[in-house]
Amino acid sequence: MNIKRLLLAVFCSLIVWILIMQYLFCPKFSFETAHPFSGTIFYNPYDSINEFYWRKCNFHAHSHAWHGFANGNGTSADIYHAYDSMKYAVHCVSDYQKINTDFSSTPGFIPAYEHGYNISKTHQLVLGASKVLWLDYLFPQSLDNKQNILNHLSADPDNVVIIDHPADYYGYSATDFKYLTDYNCIEVLSRFALSLSRWDSALSNGHPAFVVGNDDVHDIFLKETLGKMCTWVNVPIVKGNTVLNALKTGRSYGMIIGNSKKTLPELKRFEIIHDTVSIAMTQPAAQITFTGQNGKALASYRNTASSKYIIKPEDHYIRTTIEYENGPKIFLNPVFRHDKMGIMRRPTPIDVQKTFIFRSIGVVLLIGWLFMALLFSLSNINLRKITNELHLPKMRQ
Image (cartoon, rainbow, N blue to C red; front, side):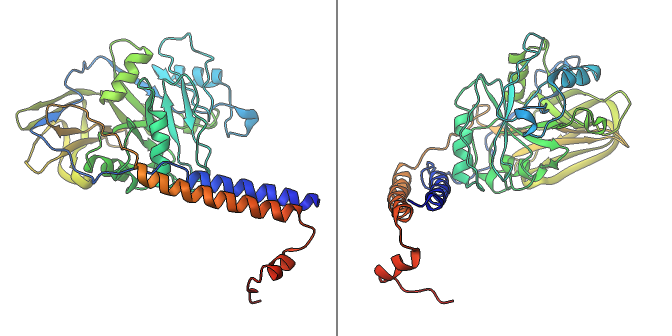
């Protein structure tokens, strides 16, 4: 037996197995035709907020893990003390495929990890998890691959599933968000990418997705990467379950802090009275913008701490952006239409027939490949001789 032939056959078989597992054995889903939010009632995530209960959070930071292979510098203690010194109420260590429990006894501790080891940076942040999901798809992912991962991550109802930096690299396209379900939030604000188009795509197609902002720091000693993006949650007591519930229900907002050293503005009031959205901030803003279907700007007001918008019949959702001169930029969660059902996340069913067909094709291809690989590794004749004996046509040079 030729050892080189055997090793080559094993390596090629491994690649073929990975490809077949990803593209043929993965479940196929019946993605529904997208529909915008509809109904006579608007869901308002801020209807029960208290202006004194806003807590600053960062859910995405990497420590030195996996012997440095996972691109992280600094210990969990370094991360804890850095964010604690900046008055963050919640700050998670979210290493790749690893839950760090070093500070599990501290108030507000939330177990977290970043899922994904594929080449396209199709990553998800999982908060509240008790174990790590090791299933992933190595090569550029199909829509079915992405949905299957989200289904597994959201199987535990206690988890908060956040789609990480979707506009970074080839993680998720805006078209993906027309169809994907079974997640809670989108990391719209990241120093690696701003993903507003992805967020508006999800909202325009009737998927309730809430904003998250994170530093996604990989080196805690690079001070210029700390305290630049954050998420604010409205909770009376800083406890893991209350923070997670605030994220699930949208009682939160994202902020680009930038280099501001001033006291940060906060949301004071957000109401919907009849057909009018009314908003008030703790500080006057340079501009307040209301955005709707397909990311269209609906109205904008300058140099004010409060503003109103009259809802029109064609408005399916409305999200608000508050900008400050040379300072922070705030992205509020959307208000959206519903019909007495509140937050409804439509699960995506598996297409059983299509899944069976693709898996059957995969089995046939796998058996055929294994037969050829075995023949190749055990044979003492070269491939050209095999080709001649099988009377296969020669390739032109």
